[in-house]
Length: 136
Image 1: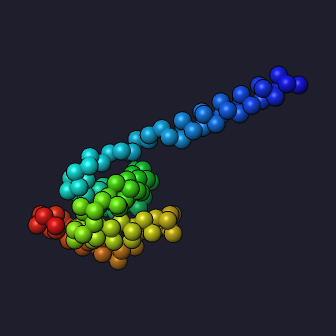
Image 2: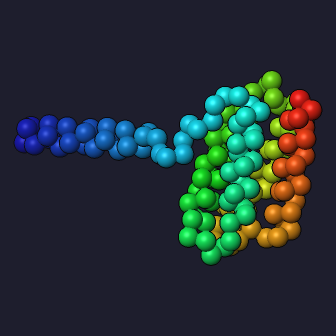
Image 3: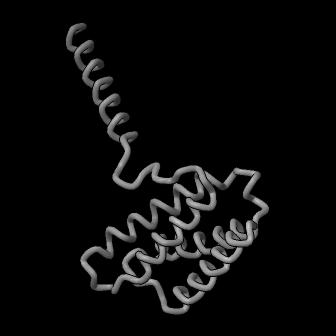
């Protein structure tokens, strides 16, 4: 009986370790930001534009949306608490755009992004690019 309990606990521990390591492994898109705020912001804008510009029936649409969600999460995780960028107009505008798109993806995962939201996001992306060019 004691040996059976030992093996049961050992197996449970092994499963926890395997699941933990598998959950912590990186996927194809993770940790793709460099730490250079300007470069990372432009890369995220390009990724989001690509995801938004694809036709709704494109076979790579789901993968592009997954990458867009991942980039949104990475960007927020890296720069949300970074005081050196928090006051920049490019950051506040970028955060607004990211929150809008992430909200749509969360609330309506199977619906295309509405034209009105696409237009607003494109306008915000242009504002972000102009602010980055000005250095703010």
